[in-house]
Amino acid sequence: MTPWMATMALVAEVAEPVTAAIFLVCGLFLLEVEARSPALDPGCRRLARGVGWAYVGVAAIIAALLLLGIVPWGVARSG
Image (cartoon, rainbow, N blue to C red; front, side, top):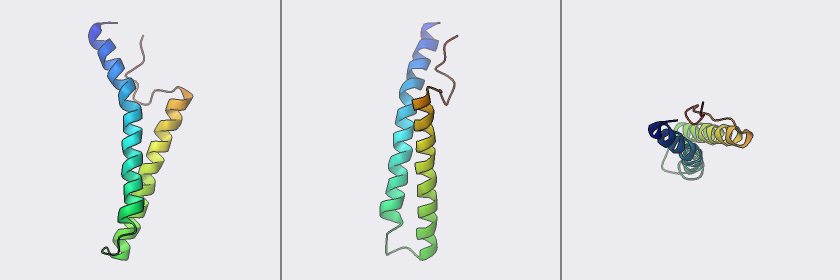
């Protein structure tokens, strides 16, 4: 494995949990702040809840793949 590929593999390994954490934080923000905001109309709050749950779901899928040892992005596998 070349140094460039080793560096990319390391970046991919670090990026996966960070990506899951960012999706989780954004989803929880939408669920806790935007979905409860009295300044928004009911349609916007419903949309914020839906997108928030979708973000939390993506974070859960990435976390499950990491726990199972499956690399979601496929870059970090060495040959």
